[in-house]
Image (cartoon, rainbow, N blue to C red; front, side, top):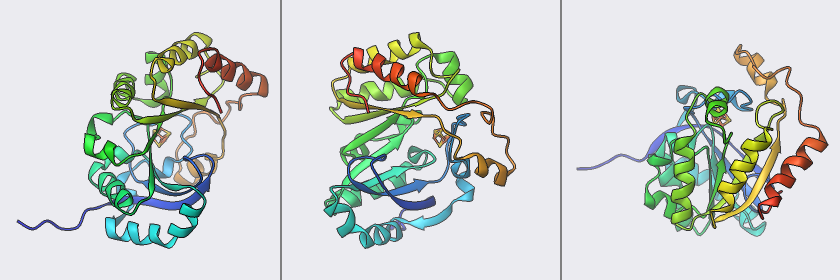
Length: 246
Ligand code: SF4
């Protein structure tokens, strides 16, 4: 039996420095996401059907153009979205080809579909950027439309595999600033030896124009960004548990 080339739906790609893993990264935005986070900055990636079809060869050819640049800068390739684990065949194939090419790989995921990540896919992933949206099950459901359990199970599995993790936490006043939930999350993460650092990402509204363009209501339009004192308090809470916080 012959099989065709692996294809998938992608939104776009870009270069970034500092936020999507070490060094300068080629960032591939994979289309489609099963969650609907109220603060999502990329609502234009939600639907797989809106992405354009691409083969893994096409993606790799594009990455190859930037190869010298991203390797010189100590960077690599990051798959994000949307949710890259919604298309595990595409994501797994790109990660595999990057590893074969000697590139550092990172996977940015909510972990909600972590069960779709095979051990092989994870073996080809050097670093997981795990987005944990809330540690309170009710808040998580209201904030994302999905359950928290799969994300925590995935974090535990990654730790068992010894997979390096950077945890990302979007801080939204009135939603994810509850001290008790943050303490619970920090205690949970402190128990996972492979968590290397926590990135506190202050909520912002840079995606608001995308909602307007899509004619979709932006539910947090009137929610303020966190002030410096709140960001400091939350960073301090994670540090109290011995975690490295950025
Ligand atoms: S998981 Fe990411 S892409 Fe999906 S809705 Fe949430 S913030 Fe947006």
